[in-house]
Amino acid sequence: MKGFQIFPFGENPGCITDGWLVDSEEPKTNLKMTTLEAVGVTHDAEFGSEVLEIKASEFFRGSIVFPDTPEKFIGTPFPYLMVHLRNLKKFTAIEVDIEDTEEEVRKFRASNSQSLCRLIENVCCIPMTLTEDWNVVVLDLRSLCARVFGTEYKHCVRVRIFANCRLGKVFFAENAQKEP
Image 1 (tube, rainbow, N blue to C red):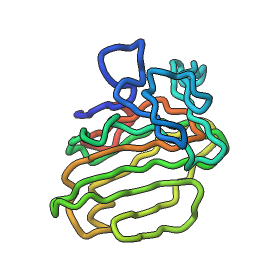
Image 2 (cartoon, rainbow, N blue to C red; image 1 turned 90 degrees about the vertical axis):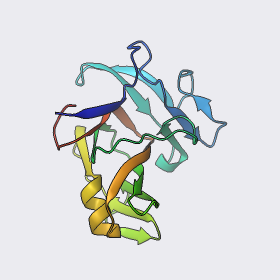
Image 3 (cartoon, rainbow, N blue to C red; image 1 turned 45 degrees about the horizontal axis):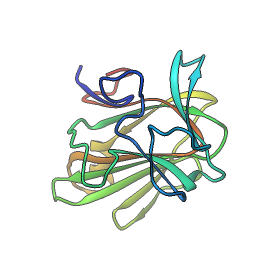
């Protein structure tokens, strides 16, 4: 079982948001400053630990991004992105930038705000169905890349989680599984 966890990230369990950046209509703010109304660390009894809650009036108005600067990239070749996400009964989305073997950066956006697949240039939007409470969203980036763009997945560049959810864990894995 091989995996690479990006949330919570790092060796410091006291700061679950290391490496992430808030991206909103407000000036960019490092997540270590969780005083923003839209982003906060809270204890979730059902999940059993601290989680990150992201809220906004409309989901596309706020998000968190990993890594925290455009100069960095994730670079993991693991094709399965697993997101432990709590449905807050509002629209939310997960966006993943990948690089394929043709050296093209392409984007997959899964959202519960839409019911149809769309492809506009290098951006593929797919519907995401969430149940009440906690969900494990699994994106098979290798399969999506082959089916949508006709190319091979090389590595992940960036992950963005949009507002109106609670985030428990985000990781990449070699195989579809529950934990890294």
